[in-house]
Length: 99
Image 1: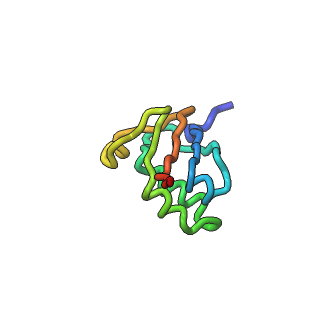
Image 2: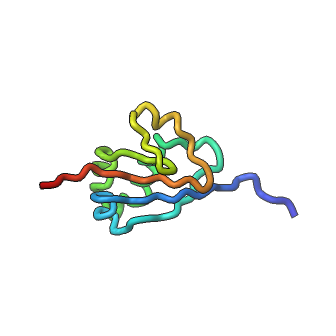
């Protein structure tokens, strides 16, 4: 038997604060292309996956910071440089307010 060349990788997304509240979940595992998928593309993928249920998700993600394998991604420009691969853990970290 021959195998197909269109394999996918999976990443784990951790949702905190407003992202978790908006989606009603704290974690999910999602498929991504095996190669050539960057952190800058993840926001659109998540909005596409969840937009029917949560039209405010994009606003939440726009104000969030990102962490990849427990390392903060500090600059929006860096989002285009961080390639995601199989088994990577991405955290969506929303700003929080306190009193």
